[in-house]
Length: 230
Image (cartoon, rainbow, N blue to C red):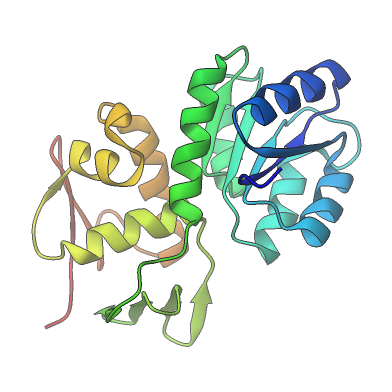
């Protein structure tokens, strides 16, 4: 198998088997483990391109596994869970997940989400890569590095994709649909809640008060605007 590497983490053998067979049939190099502890170890040793993570598992559980993985590796993480309440989704995104899919789901939708995740985790194009600056915030596109003063800010691939898209369009209002199409794809143009979660996480990590923002400004009902120095 030579396709993108997908690691499936789920304590149900039937789900692991079904997902692995379906993804291999789609051309992915899929492997599976049964616990959060195994997931952390597998990511360290095999470095998958995308991680599919269940939340309700014995041991450290999905949320803690996401936190541990996110501390060390920037790979895209998609949560697959029966827990579909808004608070469950917020908690998973807080932990460092990039996307959330509620069980049961269709394979076509999952494969579409994986394609989006792979775009977020892909290497940036070559050429003259800019450094965007706003106050203490610096976004070094060439090094894929975000700093706030002397502190490096660790973003998920999706958070990074949203931030760099807004920075590249600094000074102008970018609509919700524009960001969603550019970062997630055209099929996500109406998923404003997903974008709102991501911007919320960005603001928390950048210590950017939404009432008195320094970097990410909201135009209510329309979209966002990034303030760029100079």
